[in-house]
Image (cartoon, rainbow, N blue to C red; front, side, top):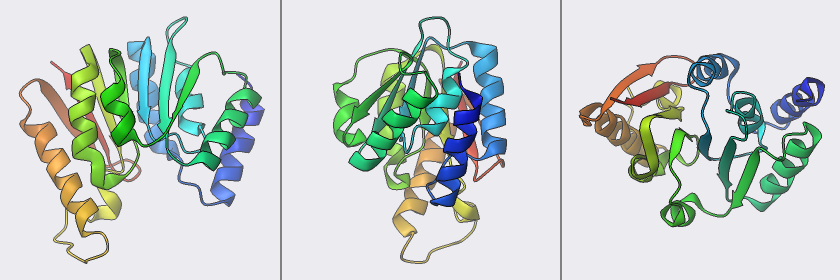
Length: 195
């Protein structure tokens, strides 16, 4: 993996205000990936490919990441970035809306990373659980959503996202098959492991 190119990708994304995974969140996830050596990762929300590239370093030999992105320009940028860093044999980009793509997938994943439309997290969870392997782990970024999720925030603009994130967290915590923790790193990271 070309680390210099990776740093350039990160810098460019930050300059262009493209949301990418925060450093402290990435550190926590990298540790989990290092311990679990996943064979297959599903990422919901590719953006410019930065997180998928970072995760690809921890895959088991011949492991693969399937990542879903609906914005065509981002897909093109992600493909270019993945090529620059020389990990195109490890990352498979699925272009389209995750709500339409997820039901068509039937792979078993060791790790599912959710980082797309906040209002759709409950749907993403249902699909993630359907495809999660025996010792699988679901990771979800931005679950505290600028602190709104744990406060009595009720402003109209973000109300749906906040309500759905609360529902998502409640579902995770009530699911008897999962052991869930929410860390206050970045903008909130949920880690749910199959028991």
